[in-house]
Length: 402
Image 1 (cartoon, rainbow, N blue to C red):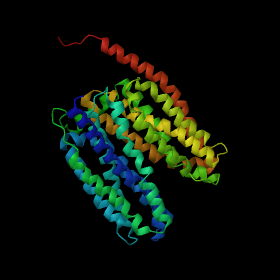
Image 2: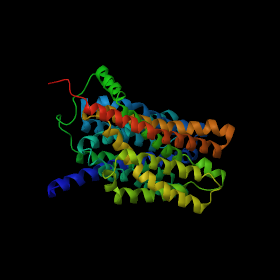
Image 3: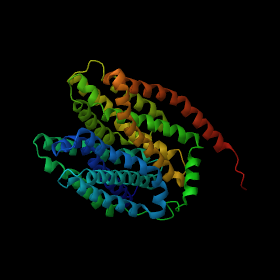
Image 4: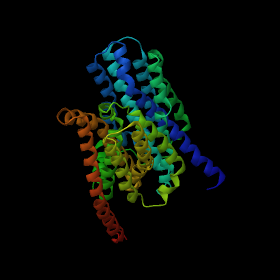
């Protein structure tokens, strides 16, 4: 790359990473909301509904963003998401236990978060070529891990100090900064992004994605990997059974994940990415399973460090595999579909933990989810080989056009 193109390359990476940092940030600090809501008078049931409203709207909007983004353009979608996020954060921060206002505000934040994250993920698919996606995505996704090392400890410290009114301003700060980042993200030309489609044509294109064997396997691998991510996010019930804090595992994971993505990014473009999928899932699901076997503070830290290696490589690998598996014109549909499935993971794990935990206990329920993930991950290797064989035979087939 020349000096100017190199600078442009890193400028895009920086502002995309910053966008993910602030959007993921106001999502991550929401994990402490039950503590805040209890302080201002909400029942545990009401607090649970308020927390769930965010994830429900975040998941629901994702399949439709592949239709909306080509019609409106990235800039308009991001500005709309940014403004809705700020309004939602203001609604959450306003004092007083008004449940319906808080519910609408949390739902608005979820809508903004889902739209912003899918918008950024789709944008990066168009600005980075297949040969450069591994390294670029690895660097960009550092932004998604850094809140666990900065904003989350800050929020935890504020609540520990009983600074509730200051804590609730952290999501507002993050949403304002996410909005401020948007002018630095350039709009793509119509020659790069496919033209907008009608709803019928859009969903036919989405169905076309599912006719591609490589996309179906990439989506399965992405779902399984994100299942381990979601399982780790909700491991507090399991660690509490042993009288330990989940932060021993989660903080060490985030530290190593950031280092891996910063210093190991080039490796993701030097090897076939599908071959990296299984090791990443085995590392993440395997360390979670081992964390259930008589854990101590030291073992949780050590397993978290190993988990961070799989997480550090795994997320950019699987995001890139989704983009690699479809042609350029199907990128919006493929990416919005994959992020919808990721959202399903985060919605499904708490439900599974609750349902299985009632009969099996939190530790056994946790092990069942990890074991299920490992079995399907090993099966995916054979599916990858079949999909790549099918892709090779299609490329060898002569074109019907002269």
